[in-house]
Image (cartoon, rainbow, N blue to C red):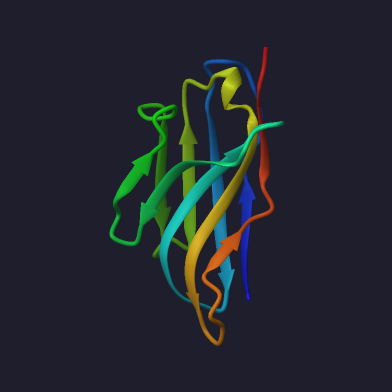
Length: 120
């Protein structure tokens, strides 16, 4: 069993910054990739940023240059630094992991989500 716990969401004015964190715990053998997704009301969940165990990162076009994904401790903790925030960044942000565990074939894990609201 694996748990992903997000934190760091909140209400910020346009142009502000937030840092999201995601902590992975449980019967983890290895973490291959960790991602941040977001879902705004009435819209599909979209991939925001990805980091691999090798340290490679990738970003959605809409956040490139403003958001930075990073990780510590073999990706057991992952961060999303969000700068120059815009109202259209408002969404629930979810942490997702491609994780190999002890005693299970499951690899796909999600956190519960954290609300990010950008408003003046």
